Length: 194
Image (tube, rainbow, N blue to C red; front, side):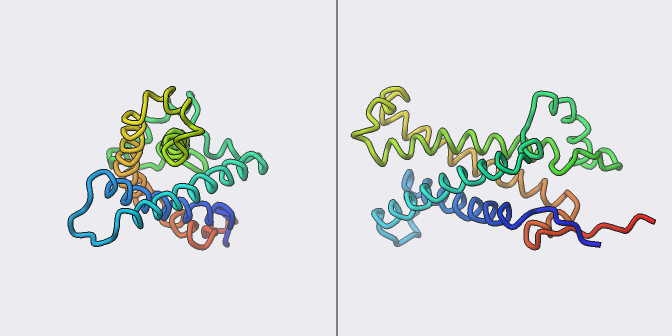
């Protein structure tokens, strides 16, 4: 029996976010410290970077709106009481315990990463928008500490994503393979209870 696990909207948001953040991270690192092997003009890289930035921010707004409108935000929100689940979660994912703890749709690690990504995208996106529109954003630039601090915020955003994407992939590949399939098809196979 198949059960809908990831609606089409979530799958679209996921893949737009995955591809967009991957390109943003690569182009961001290239803009910070150009790759010598890449023979693309910096102006082209900058355009790609900013277009992806706008797409990712619009996607984030749509993604959050979906959870609010459908009232399914409890599936994804990391709450303070999720900290109590971290030890059993860590034991299972580090292969120190056998039984799979039931955390609901997403485990505490996924919830923590998803929520932290939203916060980091908002901060990095604000820095990116301020860099793109420096004149009207001068109060925000001053509030954030100036252009140099803005560049550091954007750079640290890329570092954060580069560091947490492998963790996300590890959690995905050590989780139930049916859930991995759901991000492509939307469905998980469930055994019929008799």
